[in-house]
Structure formats: structure tokens, C-alpha cells
Length: 562
Picture 1 (cartoon, rainbow, N blue to C red):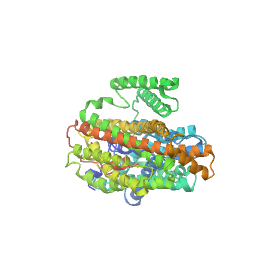
Picture 2: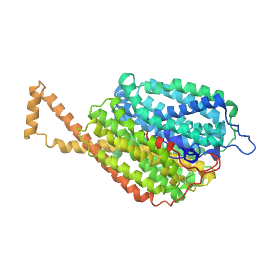
Picture 3: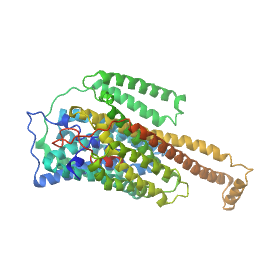
Picture 4: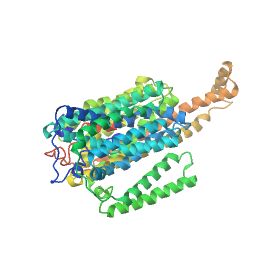
């Protein structure tokens, strides 16, 4: 991988949840770098550099892994805590929303407290939050702890990139980022496999407990090696009002989306109140951010055509991707009889082609129109979803896995070109703000997309269930024959009707999933003309790895794989 293509990126990290911050690291470099009077430390040498690289990569691996490991465990978590599997998706959305809020604050926090202190504290708090997640006795507690985990995870990946780059001389920056990128590419593959195995063979809390020894070791090694390399601390203003409005509006919208289905949407006073809070808070937030001298999210960047087009397309596409990624294991485990381990095995291959192809895409993105590459990615996503839309309840393991493998191709051509479109032409002085806003939109889009997808899945299943039961009546020969056969097996009439209803549910939710897949494919196709509203712009590789806008790296595709 070339130095340019391996340079730290600013958009596309994901999940989401946690990996979503992965691409703010190098971009905030102008904001994180010290002024001229502050002497930057020399690169590390020998064993110190080796152990520093291992610790920083392990922190990234832990963060990205935690974003993907819970997806296949949602039914088990929900069942153990006494809620529906669909309510279990709050475990994913709470992490994503909190992480999105924390991402834009990384630059300010690192200058206020120092990069090394902030990174070490973030890791320790991540360990604490992971421990509390595993101990959670009920769903509200788990959601609160996951939100805490997502918030403290925000600075981890950006600062891991920044500290790693400071450990290597400029000539080896490409090698440093190549090593770092491999951890973000492998973690999304390992997450579903490890999460499924732990859930089936141990207690689900261990998907969080495994962070404790890793996190403590990372914090100890990082502090020991980097404590004398602390960056300069400066007191900078913080947009307290803007941050408060941001938290209020986003939290209200997410709670509304999560609880709307069970409270019958706008027939509920609570949902109406949450909607008004989100609307009014969002309006005040936009007005404040457009006029404040130090906005927490610089919305004025959306005046730049490429940034607006790239960020919006990225947010919409990512919301579709994450929504379908959460839906698939839920359907498999609830209605297809798959275990968590089997569901994890089906999700894991999504990272294989991303690992193989993303270095090639990153190396050649400067030579090709990124709009063409993004178009190819959207087409591949649509093809994958159309393949899934043909699923039925008789689909075997291989049939379900093939689209997942093909999806890795779409990921490799998705994040890297969209990073180039979004951040191409952004001046170095605005790169930190642009990166923060782009990642914020993407991560929030992923959280909202998850809630919307599950809600639509339930609504469409109810419609299909009502249509299917019309054929289940005493005048139907098929119904009479089925009831007779079940009675011969010793089932009572109530048990026989419950069995038939279960079969109807299985078909209804299968048809609803097909509707989601088909609709998502259509939206991906609609994104194709949208991306061509962007102008073609080349990103100029800087002389130093942290001095300005950079070509996206292979790590960009990693984020989406989780």
C-alpha cells in the first residue's frame, strides 16, 4: 500500500457504532497539531515503537470489534433481559448516537487535556463502560451503559491514528497506517464470529467483559510509552449551547424512532412531545451553529457542493447498509432457526473482499473519477439486496451467504471514493470540521437507519400477516388438512392454531424482509444520479502525513464492514 493511500482518512469509519470515528484521526491533525513554538517529539525507536504500535492497534481492534460483536447477540440479550428482539436494537442505536455526538468533540478535548491523557482516559472509561454493560440487570441500564461506552469511544480511534503517526518517521507513515488498517479490517470479520460463539457457549455479558484485560493492557502500555510525548494543552472555547441543542435534538429523535412503534406513533402524547422537541431543538441547533464563532458542528461546510453531496449520500447509503446488517441476523435467529454462531458465520465474510480490494481502490482512487467508483458501489449494493429479496424460508446457508460475500466488493468501492468526493478540495484549516460533520452525519444516519428499518419490518410483517390469515379459515381445504394432521400428532386445537400462526408469522416476516431489501435496492439506485451532482476534484497528497487533506486509505472500507 502506498503512503498516500495508507494515510489516515477522515470519512467512512464506522457502525457504527465505534468504528464510525475511525476516519477523523488524520483529518483533525491541523486542529490537533501543536503550534510552531511547541517542539513535536521525535519518532519512537525499537521496542517502544513496536509495543506502541501493538497497543494502539489493539485499542482500535477492541473499539471496532465492540461495534460489530453485539449484532448477532441481540436476540439473546433481549430474551435474557425480558424485552422483544426488536427492542434489543436499542443496544446498537444508543452506542451509535452517543458516538456520533462525541466525534466532533475530539479535536477540542485533545487540545484541552492533551492527546495522550485523553486517549488513556478514553480507554479506561471504555473498559469501565464495558464492565457495566456486562453487569446490566435490565435493558434501560444496558442502554445507558452502551451510550456511555459509545461516547467515551469517540476519541479512541482518531487519537490512535494520530499517536501512531507521531511514532513513525514520515517515510514510514504508509507502513504505520497499513498496520493500523489491518486491525480495522480484521475486526469486523472477527466480531460476528466471536460474538456468536460467546453467546451460544457462554453468557452474553462476555462480549463486553473481553474488553477489560485488553483495555487495561492498552492503557498501561500507552501511558508508559507516550506520557512524555504529551501534546501542548490550550484552553479553547467550547460551543456549550450548540452541544446541548445537538444532544437534545438527536436524543429526542432517536428515542422517538425507537419507541414509536410500541406507542402507536403520533397517537401517543410522548411521541408527539419527542417529535416537537426534536424539531424545535433541531431548528434552534441549525440557527445557532450557522451564527456561532466556534460551532461544535460547522454546518456552513454544507455550502460546498461536493461536501454536501458526498456527506448526504454517505449518510443515506450507510443508514441503508447498517439497517440491513442488523435486520439480517434478527430474521435468521427469530424465524429461520439459526443460532448466534451460525448467524455470525453468515455475517463474517462481508469483510473478506474489503480486505483484498480496498488497498487497490485506495491506491488508484486518484487516477479514477471517484464518482464512477461510487456508482459501481451503489450498483453492487443494489445487486446484493436484489439477491436477498429473492430469499424464502427454504433458503439454505450457502444461498444466504453468497450476497454477504459479494457485499464486500461494494464496501471496498464505497467508503474510499466517497471520502475523496466529500473531502476533496476542503482546505486544511477546515479539514477537522469537515471530518467531524461528515462522520457525525454518517453515524447518526446509521443509528436512525437501524430504528427505521426495524420499524418498517414490523409494520410490513403485520400487513403480510393480515393478508395471509385471510386464507386460513374453516372453508379452506389446506387449513382443514393441516389442522387434521396436527391433531393426529396429539396437538390440541389451540396448539394446532398456534403452530399455524407461527408458520404464518415466519412467512410474513420473510415477505417483510424482502420488502426491505427491495426498497433499499431502489434507494441505492436513486443515489446514483445524486452522486453525479458532485464535481470531480482530486485530493492533493500533502508533504507530511498530517498536514492536510489526504487520500482515503484501505481503512475506510473497514469501517463499513462492521
